[in-house]
Image 1 (cartoon, rainbow, N blue to C red):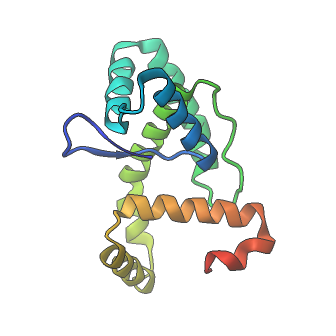
Image 2 (cartoon, helix red, strand yellow; image 1 turned 45 degrees about the horizontal axis):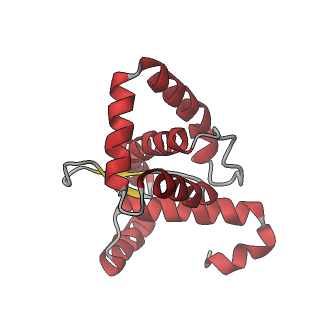
Length: 155
């Protein structure tokens, strides 16, 4: 789920289990109509996050709890998420910001050969680093869930 805030220069990536992405989209479409955008969802989340300390505390606590599970690509689990789709979206936004903050460390630790391949992939497909990392995370978790299908992911 790619989301931008009202200021289109700020791009925020949500890190979410694939099964939740569609559920969140359906929720927002039912609640606000098909014209409701990811940018509006992020703006709404940000407003609630900054004005409601109880909501912010719940979202931050759950994101901290889920972060080590989500970013462990060898673990097929996505952890236990709340039922509320708006809370799920908010947690995804915080995890996306966490991913963005950790990208430099990850890139610095990457071998030159993998760095060159990643640079080529960004250049060839026109996707952002965040989008590529999220796709690779989803692929890794899927492969960890079903090792028999690992060959299908192009490892």
